[in-house]
Structure formats: C-alpha cells, structure tokens
Length: 204
Image 1 (cartoon, helix red, strand yellow):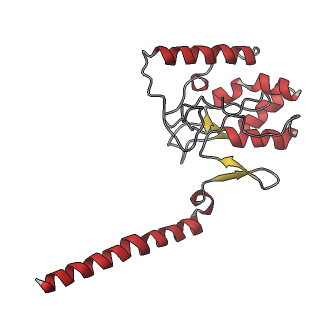
Image 2 (spheres, helix red, strand yellow; image 1 turned 90 degrees about the vertical axis):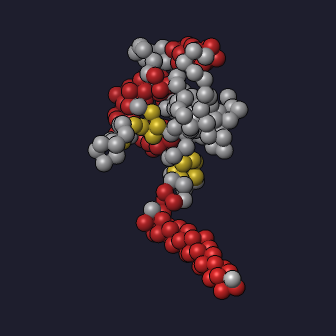
Image 3 (tube, helix red, strand yellow; image 1 turned 180 degrees about the vertical axis):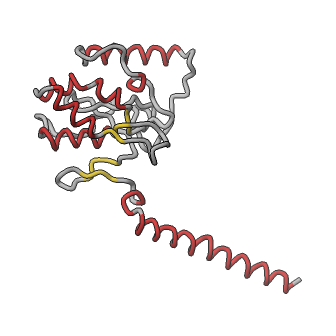
C-alpha cells in the first residue's frame, strides 16, 4: 500500500511539473519567438508608437471622418472587451427590430449620399459584440461621408479602403474583410488627421 501511494505521488508530481510548468512555459516561449505580435494581443500602434487598440477587438468610432464598425452588444454600453457577448435577441424580438430601425435611420441621416440599402453588417452585432472587421461593401458604403468630412474626393477615400481589404485566409477560409482600426489609421496616414485626434469614440 505504501509503495503504491509513493508511486502515485511521484506520478502526480511529475505530471504537475510537465503540464503545469514545462508545457505552458515551452508554448509561451515558442509563441513569443514565432508569433510575437499575436502572442501579445495583436496590438496596433499609430505613427507615434502609441497603442491605439488591437486588430482583434472592435471599437466604437462615431466621428464622420472615420470608418464606423458594427454595432456592439458587449457590456452595458457596447464595445466592452471584458464582457464579450451578443444580445441574444431572436428574430422576432421587438427590441432587436427597434434597435435595427433606429440604426438604419441614423445611418441614412449621417450618410445621405450613400446608396440603398444599408449593408447588413452595419446594423447587426456579431456574436462576440467585438467584431473588428467589416465587409468590403459596408466599408465602401461609407466613402461619401468620410470624403465629405475630410474634404477630399470620394475616389481617394475609396482607393485607401480598397487597399485595406484583406483576402480570405489561405485563399479559402473566411470572407474578404476590412479591419476598421487599421483602415482608419491608413486614412490618417494618407490624408492627415481631421480637426480632432483619432481616438475611439466614447461608448454610447
């Protein structure tokens, strides 16, 4: 009995060391060497080196000179990275219909020159509430407003956004997309910052 207990204790200690220390430290070290940026949160920096967000986490941008992302149901005011979640409203939910209707009306008001209809991803939240990307159609739909706010031609804004389109991963996975934060930084780099500095808008 004593021999079996000692053997079990040895196995437990070895397993604890291997799975609790050796493996995690080895994987962390490999990640830092092979995927340093991603292992540290895929942080995005502006031209001054200041961290302005992560390419994996959506933010709220409401200034007219910037690309606006998808609605968010994460947290009480949306875009809360500590409360990633969807609204869980079903297709028959009156609250969901009212929210979408209000967003459509707001988008029409803010984008009077944009074509109809409003792209679906501009009025629907993702399951996480923190989707950092838009479809190319939703990004290009906002060109007239951004051009007007920056007082430049729509063609110049469209050119920047088209360059920001990311293809499917490995050519087959996912859909073409535009990272909202990266595109907004590209707009500032190309045309300069608007009157107020580019920063995530305060949560609604």
